[in-house]
Length: 198
Ligand SMILES: CC(C)(COP(=O)(O)OP(=O)(O)OC[C@H]1O[C@@H](n2cnc3c(N)ncnc32)[C@H](O)[C@@H]1OP(=O)(O)O)[C@@H](O)C(=O)NCCC(=O)NCCS
Image (cartoon, rainbow, N blue to C red; front, side, top):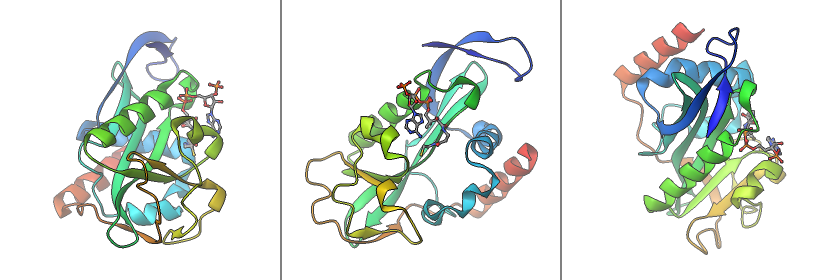
């Protein structure tokens, strides 16, 4: 795919192919900027953030979309358990640069993320988001009614996707984080990346 991206948002657009790849340390600053622009500075107050703070994303499931050198999209998935003994993934945040939305980049990231999750042997993905967007990837409110998050959430936005048929049957209980914790040195690195982006 080719889209038009402005190198510094003030220059004329240039054509660059979109590449989806694993997120790396070099993407962190630009990712923070993109997320602030997409969700606002209070994004960390979201209930989903309670399941992400202090944790590492699931292995191989932090992805970015790049156009040339420019980060234009991001998605991460996180290890959680849906009540006791039911491992799953939490998806989010998903965001695409506002200058080039509706070019298919969100879809690319979603399809790569769900396909990798399936390949890695995960059974289900949950998220809190706009059902009119996520239903095209198979997410639905069905089977989510007996699960709850560690904070307020709108039921109509609390969605699940079975990667293995029946994986959400009987799901019940509190969604809790199970991913690895961010090592202290990496926490400092992340804080530095954030400050550089601010
Ligand atoms: C949601 C988002 C990631 C989609 O990225 P994208 O690259 O524009 O997505 P795609 O190009 O694959 O799909 C675009 C389609 O999704 C639709 N769409 C985008 N956001 C939507 C939403 N919140 N609800 C319903 N439809 C939505 C567009 O209207 C477009 O529809 P069309 O194909 O009929 O024209 C992007 O709009 C974004 O970053 N939004 C702000 C952050 C956000 O809200 N993220 C998560 C959603 S809860």
